[in-house]
Amino acid sequence: MRITALTEAPGPSAYRLAWIAAGDDGHPVATAYLRVGTTAEAQHRAEAEVAVHPAERRRGAGTALLAEAVTAARGLGRRTLVAGPVAAGSPGEAFLRARGLRPVLALTYARLALADVSAAPAEPHPGYRLVVWEGTVPDELAATFTAARRAMDDMPMDEADVAPQTWDVDRVRAVAAAVAARGDVLCTVTAVAETDGSIVGFSELVVPGTGTADAQHYGTAVLSGHRGRGLARRMKAEAIRHIRQRHPDVPGLLTDTADSNVAMRRVNDALGYRSTHRSLLFQLDL
Image (cartoon, rainbow, N blue to C red; front, side, top):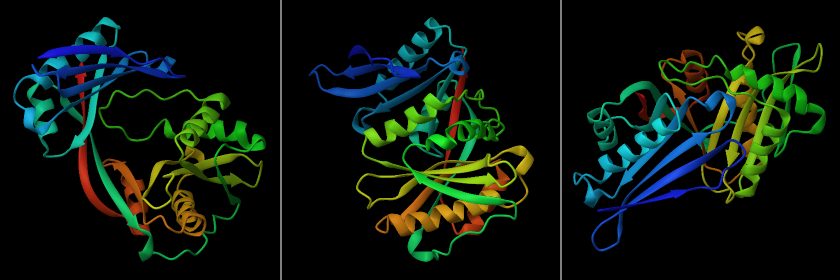
């Protein structure tokens, strides 16, 4: 087996190292990636992904590539290696457990079939209004939307070593630009406080460029001082209405939620999302 190492050109917040394992005939049998974050909050961790062709499993390729990723992460001074998420009960779970990684976060994936729900608009709690846009945040809302990103900081993550992310307006715009560059559409629903016009919650969805496949939730959160008023449910309900109206060929919405995030799972259940499968995030302390 021959292993070839590659390095990706750095992006605005991360770069990737890659390894390709090939057999005697030169054909690739397995790959590994190590995502190395460069932002301040990501300096202590790296994220690994290993994939082995089913016909080539149990021959040591995956073990060798994971070892390369671990060695590289240690060499970069990272304290934590994160892998996954992988489907619960899958060969990937068995592989990671056998190599000393431990599960730190359980996720439940769910889907909403849009044909089964109504498109009625959602009315927010008195004192709030909903504002929706596609693509990059409007200039007049950029600062308050960026400030609202901290609503994700206390999202339940169980034992996963995940530090709160630092956001600025440039990063918010860069994320929207990256989604657009690959041909997809970023849809954002926000809850705005009538008292001062600040954004206090948001829900993001990405619609695939074809407009005919399931859209993916990227995150829903409400600032702590505004929780308990049904804003998360109302924003998600408005997102459903918006997608059905603007992207009528999208058949469903996908979401994943930590099992311990009871409040958001209740919102999903109330809106008609149905569980499809579970996965696990693994971690290795370096």
